[in-house]
Length: 123
Image (spheres, rainbow, N blue to C red):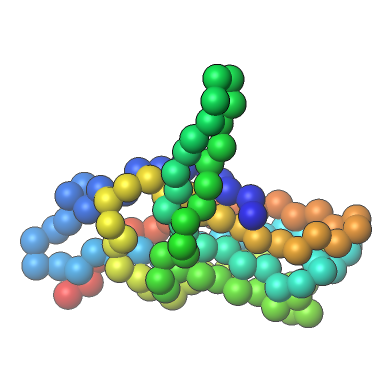
């Protein structure tokens, strides 16, 4: 899994009295002319870091419920940029998170992902 840069989520930063805070993921996925070897998934994951001197490893935890975008391999349009949007999901617990992309390797397949976490409020 490829992780995008980490971000901190703190509920207090997004709380508006009387409203529910929700998130969604909006992703643009560009592909070359080679189909992926399997389904593509994009989601929000809590992350932890560890490492010895001069190294760091960032590890993804369990997918945040409701944040998953799944793209079936046979529906991923080749040689195009397509937009995908997750369903709405509630703010997870405070902590460090990253958007993760899982694309099964295929010889000569290449992908470019731009994804963002969007915040909105509802009654």
